[in-house]
Length: 170
Image (cartoon, rainbow, N blue to C red; front, side, top):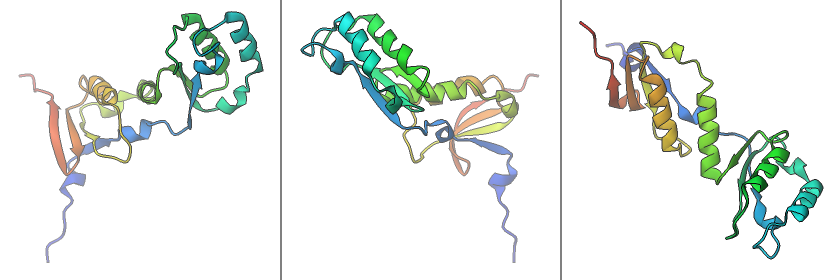
């Protein structure tokens, strides 16, 4: 009887799973629409007063998207005032929708990894998972790994699509 040999395990391939960087904290929306007069106009004095009475605790340790769902012209400082109140208590604060927040959180977490552990390694960036990973994350990890990895592949260790292979200098 022959012994089973796991060629994937012996290949030295390192799997990089972008799902590990997906935000785990709840995502909350801070919508400026609620602060508009007749859902059209933002009055600075009223807005500042309303921000003082807002229960900010609902955003504590959450990922927060700042948006305005009304079709209104919002001055830039209004978003900045919201961010000023959210930043000390929220986990992450971004302008934009949930997709933008997820991209921002993943990119922020990716920027904190030590890429040296992938130097001269064969790396598979895992595809097909439980959550949808934004394309920006795949582009960013490719940018980060290309200068140092021996090769980059996409998929699963048993079935990969080659992306990059370092050429040997003669």
